Image 1: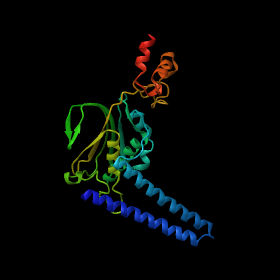
Image 2: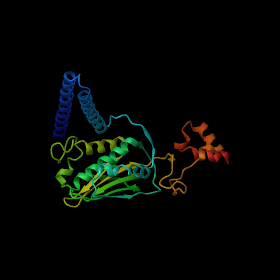
Image 3: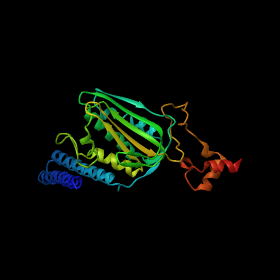
Length: 287
């Protein structure tokens, strides 16, 4: 009930502030209609406030798992590598970024935009925890899990793809960790955060049929691990993964669907041949 109360209070507070901004600048806009520069400035402020309101709505939908998804077959190593060029814009100069990516990673079926949001939210959270700089590590790997419990969550046994984001920041005590995924819960100063970043990460992980686990100690940093079920679909990159001519094993740029067996498979499966497990059946029938 405390978390629900915080959610209701946070939503009301954030939207009330944004509505006041929109209303105030709309009034100024009406009073300054003869000054083109002021009109442009006030219109921009209104657009910014509207955009922030839309962001809050998207984050709440992600947390409640009601956001409309566009799932595709993804290689998370590829997604992280592609996003790496944007991370320096989010981080401080004294934060070192380390990538430990498995180039033979299993595929997952998820919304790419949401996965990118997870990575960026965790990166920003890590940045804010490293007050004097430090190291941000993003890693991917294949893991096999037995039935077990992680912080009260039942983990179905099977093959998973692990996305891990760790930092060397100030860390968290056990009491803080209990609440970090609750919406509008934050340990940051007023105005420094919405309290929706980790709640959004949690919602996206759950909506993607995965689960999230965190380990942290005061003064020893934090690590967030998100486990996604392995998909049986085949991922085909549209361009090379950091090597334009010699593609590493597991991330090869295929053109199999142009061959006869894959044309037959396309007709058999009525799936896009670039993301279907039916190709083995088609290959056997053509032999």
